[in-house]
Length: 158
Image (tube, rainbow, N blue to C red; front, side, top):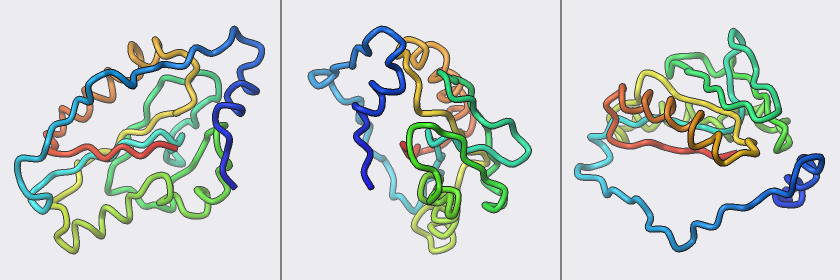
C-alpha cells in the first residue's frame, strides 16, 4: 500500500515547527553523462532505507545523520533494516527491494556492469533538517564514494 509521505511526515514531526519543504524545481540538475559503456563502469551503491549489517548498530529514528559502510561482499542474510518512514516487512523478507546488492552482483556476472565498489553506503532517509542533511550526512557519503573511484553511483531511496 502506498504511503502518503507528506501526511506521514507531518504526523511524525507534529511536535516540531511546521516542516519547510525544499523547492528546487527551478534549480539546474547536476547531470553528468557517462563517458564509457555501462559494461566498463565501477558502480557504487548508496541507499537511504536504514540498512545496516547485523554486526552494526541500527539507525535511531530521530534525525540520524550517521552512515553505515557495508562491504559489497557481505551476505544478504546479514542485512537488517531500521527505518520509521516506511513499512519494512517486505524489505526484511528481501532486502534487495531497498538495497539491491544481489541484483547488482548479478549485473556484474552477466556483464551489464564491470564491477561493484568494495563498499556500499547506507543512511536513514527520514531526516527532518535539510541543513543537517547537507552539512552532516552528505559530506561523508560523498567522501566514501570518491575514495572508491567509481564511474556511477546508484542511489536507492526508501
